[in-house]
Image (tube, rainbow, N blue to C red; front, side, top):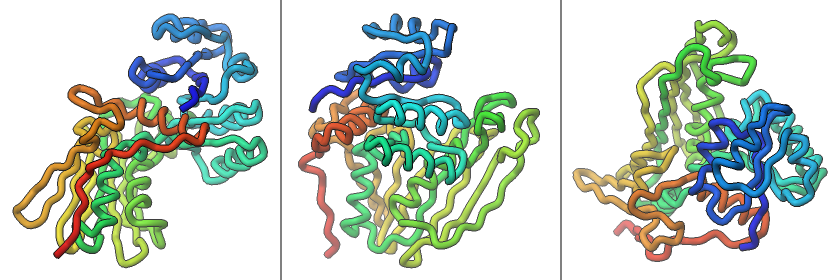
Length: 317
């Protein structure tokens, strides 16, 4: 695969966490910080990058950058995604992609006009662990899919970026995007949605939801349910329940366990996400962001996706 030259338009904690040393493996990257703050140089120095820029716009203007990663606060995603596309760059935009459907549509229109790719950064979708779950459901390992249950909660203090309305905060935007992504991946486009929410009373959180829950009616009589919360203990859950069993993904969103559980009655089987090492996973290696960056680079260059040969195939007798 030809190397894609990446730039990051934010060099604070989010870019550090997602484009840290494992994520950079095999990908030339440069950093750009806010005008006059020196963040781009600091990011580049910490990770040994050959190039940094004093502003986001300077990075976008550099002709040797092919693609840009946008991990800015949600309220800034649309502006800088469109700016990057207009500058001729492909874009990997951190989840959630946009605050509104109209903003998302503007990004897609800009990508079409620029003949560039724009990708939402839901890294769990690209992980082989997710591919195992998809394969099990498709092969009928749990019979006919009936229910999809997802949950994600964290404990974020008042004033956190995820609880600040002007920055695009709220439980559904920050956490629900994972759960809704899973429900749509396995169940298709919802036909009906019923939801309830608890407003966030924290200062600066006006209009944000602190907790939300929803039931989604899906094609073929499948029902999806999810709940999310920003003031709860950490929970990462995904269950796919069928007429003959269920698939449990123990760590669905960060993919740190690297396995999927198949339950049928009292019997449970554990399937490795990357049994032959095609994705470079192994003991202590669970970097979902590296896999996401690899997938985005392959999409840009047209390179094929690796497959984990030897994955168990299931058939019902």
